[in-house]
Amino acid sequence: MSLFFVVSMGLLSFGQDIQLPRVVPAFNQAYTEGEDAWGNCILGTGGCPDEICTTGCLVTAFSSVLAYYDIAVSVSASRSCSGEARTGMDPGIFNDWLRETGGYGQCSQDLQGNCCLIWGQLPAELEISTHVNRSEVGINPVSAVVIDHALRQGYLVVAGVHWGAFCNGGSTQSEDCHWVILTGKRDGVYTIVDPFNPDPASPFGVRTTLEAGVHGNYIIDRFVVVAGKSASDIALKIGTANDGASYQVGNRIVLTMTAPGTSYALVPYARVTKPTGQVVYATLDGATSGTPRYVASRKSLVSEPRPLNSEWMWFNKAATESDIGRWTWEIWVERADEPGTKLGRQTISYEVVPAKTVSSVGAAIVGILLVAAIAVVTFISVLGEGLE
Image 1 (tube, rainbow, N blue to C red):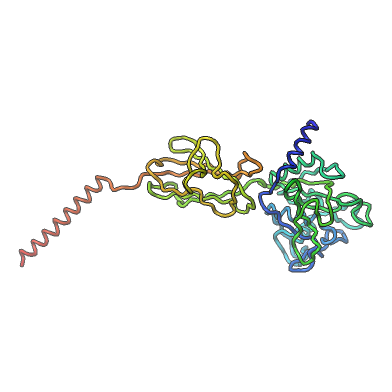
Image 2 (spheres, rainbow, N blue to C red):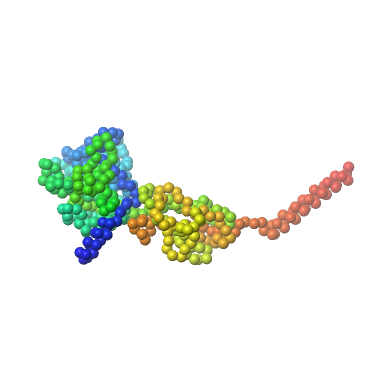
């Protein structure tokens, strides 16, 4: 790879905003005052003297990562800091789970006990890859490309950072002094969740930027790309007004879509195979609301990205004679900063059939029965008059 290419990619990444598909939960390692507070829980095993509030930034950061990927763990009452069996995800539960499952080991800086997280003991649903940022003034172009690519895939990046010559006054450690989560990029600056919030009554970490960390201007040392299952995909849901597979001419066909849990606008697409076999794109641009027009070239339903975290009705039309036959829709969304990548792809099909009418044979039979009934009534009436 040429230096020109790497630098060009870095400059390209610099100018583009990046937003994750969903909000990253933010936990505070220093939460010591409040319901289910975890800050004073003992960290590590084997007599480790640390607590989550003092050195639990990495464990707290990974708690946010696991919550982002909807991963929960369970701990027994005997190993729980609260004294109760618990299931879910927060720094207290995750720390207890690591203590119970052998997730802590000894590091060189540990004077006593096992205080360091063992990467290989993280929940199996996660895949991690470690990297080093070789720069003392910021992020080098290679690291920027790796980080941006991960974020665009919907993956999180956990980064060890420093902001001064040494981690603290009594330490010779100068790197990985603190751990934060990179959550996106805005105006060329990385957004982060800082797991240290000096407010002991708040369970929430601080949402800020790499340049405005709680401790100072953060410089990344090591960083870990954390991939979860289907991180970049979106659970797109397509709704119909009819649970059946067919509509009669005259019935109203209503189609909706929603992408639950998304926090940003998306570009929706709908491609349909008509009964004639023609494949076209549906678009609402220049069309009556709820009644798309069809074009042969690739075109989105709407020209601008739109929020889809609540149900959106994009098709509302009464079936006509010209619609008779099988309709198959392929529906998906794309991120504005990653055009061409289909997310949440769904396929639905339905049949438009003629309206039900009374057949000529059926009508004839009904007519004969009606005439017969009238004749019988007349006969009985005449017979009754004769008997009088």
